[in-house]
Length: 106
Image 1 (cartoon, rainbow, N blue to C red):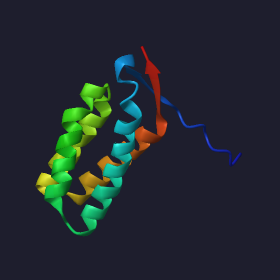
Image 2: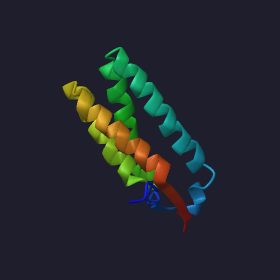
Image 3: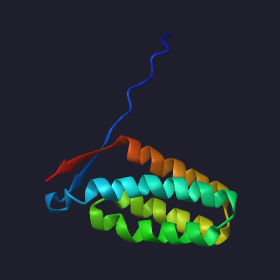
Image 4: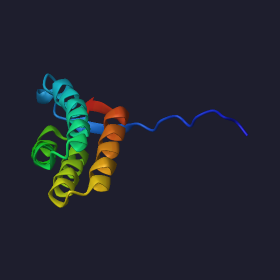
């Protein structure tokens, strides 16, 4: 048996070329959201977590990233329910998406 890791499968996201200047910053801000939400979990600031999830839910689709909208909705709901596992699982899903996404402007 080999210890070699299976290559990470990329996620292809088709985005509007008119948004090409905005997309890198948008994705960088989602990385920041992960850090902020992780810190907010430590202080049980569910209102801040809910607001960030709500923002992602609303913005993801507009930038062509429906998975971010879905994760945002799950984070928002997790914060409303104070469900730490749901929030943590959603953060892991968002982190995985951001790590694997490949942009195609068309």
